[in-house]
Length: 380
Image (cartoon, rainbow, N blue to C red):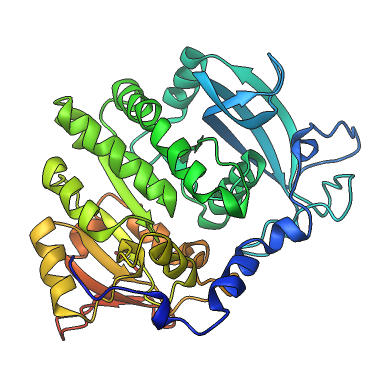
C-alpha cells in the first residue's frame, strides 16, 4: 500500500493542536474513573437490558482481587466479568455516562454485577454461550483509553449491533493521556503475547465456530502483530478460525505490508475500515515522519486497490458515516449496519474478491470505486 504520504505541510497551521484538543476533549471534561464500575445496589431498580461482558487485560489491578485496573503492565493476564445495564433512554452510538459522581442506572450505563475470574472460568463461560450463531467477539481498543472507557464502548457496540455472542474486551495498558502516544505503542506491543494466547484459547474452547476480532486504531497494530506471531508459531489452525476487522488501524502502510507478507492470505480476508479524512491518523503520520497510515488510505487510488488485492484484504471506505467528533477517527461506532453484515458467516463472501470498496451509509450498499458491480449489504 505504497501511496501518497502526509506531512505537516498538508495540514493547516494549528490543525495538529486542534486535533489533539479534540482527541483529548473527554479528558478535559473529566475522564470516567473506576467508580463507574462499582456495582449498583438499588433493589428497586429493574434493568431494561443487560449486557454480560468479559474482560481480558494486561493491565495491573490496583488491588489484588478487585476489578480496578491501572495503566501499569501486569506480569500475568487478569480476567473479569461485568453485567452492564443499558438505560431505556439510550441513543445509538452514545455512552450515557453519569453526569456527576453518582451513577443513575435509569439514565446511565451502569454495572449491576461484576466478578474477578480466573482464565479457566472465563473460557468456560464463553464456551457455554457459544453456538452456531453466537460466537466470541474480541474488542481491542485503541490509544488513549482507560479500562472503563474500553468496557463501556464494548457495551455500546454490543447493544447497538445486537449481535449474538460473547463480547470480550481485550484491554491493554493504555495511559489514557494525549502525550503518552509512544508509551501506549510500547504497551500495545507488550500485550501481543497475551492477545495471541487468548485467540489460541478461544479457538480451542469453541470448536466448530469462528472467533471475531474487532480492533480500533492502535489496537489494530496490536492485533496484526498477534496474527503475525501466530503465523510464526505455525498456528494456521487458529488463523483459519478468525474473522478480523480493523477500524482506522494506526499502522504504517509499509510495515503493514511486511506484516501481511508473514501472515499470508487469511481464510477470511481481513477487513479494513478506512477514512482518508481521519485527522487523528494525520497527526499519527506526522509523528511517524510522514508515513502513510493504513486507516487513512484512499480507496480511489488504483494503487491501493491493487495492493489490497495482492495482500488479500478488503479495504472499505466508511467516510460517508458521521463521526462522533472532529477527528473523524471513531466512525466505526456509527457502522452498526455494516458491523451486522460483516459479522455474518457469509459476509466476506458477499464482498467478492479482495480489493477496495466504498460504503454508502445512506443506501446501505458497498461498491467498488472502479465501477464494479455493487453489492447490497442489506439482506445478505
